[in-house]
Image (cartoon, rainbow, N blue to C red; front, side, top):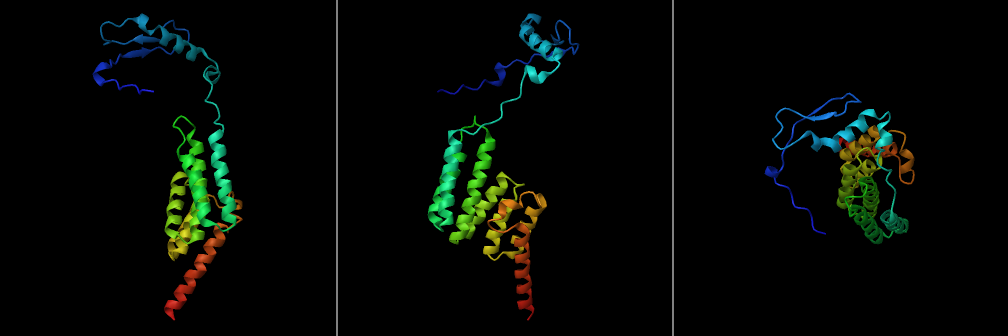
Length: 224
């Protein structure tokens, strides 16, 4: 399919209009003073019909209903299937295969056509990258785990699981202060509602406590 060529600016004529908000006005939209020659009030017939409908509608949402609620489609099924397969490999400690499957899930989510609801691409991609971050951490590739966690935060900043993954990667890299800050930032976004999502790992507060204990031990060792 050929794309439409762009219309040059000099081919567009701006016509000044005026609006009469009176609902029963026969012509709510009119040519304003200074309109270019060659334009007549009759040119606004379609626009006036639309204006009258909007001005007289007691419930504009009925005339122009909101867009439909996005629904998952076949791509969503494929994204979820690859993610679930990755989860199975993750449970078995097969980090390489889990990473491959999470990558497939992420690529499927990221390649959604632009006309599909981007809420699915964002949520699916964030979940796949979050899981891949955990797999990278299990494999010992801490930098890759951190990169994925940062991407998750960019996609869904209020989601505390991204901050949890970032903190775990930083702690694994022995960047304890930064890891502690990542955990605390996650708690600030939602201190209670989503902690159940982390029950299979550790909740953020416990992670903070563990890092603080490591920091105390390090300080004690340095002062000895």
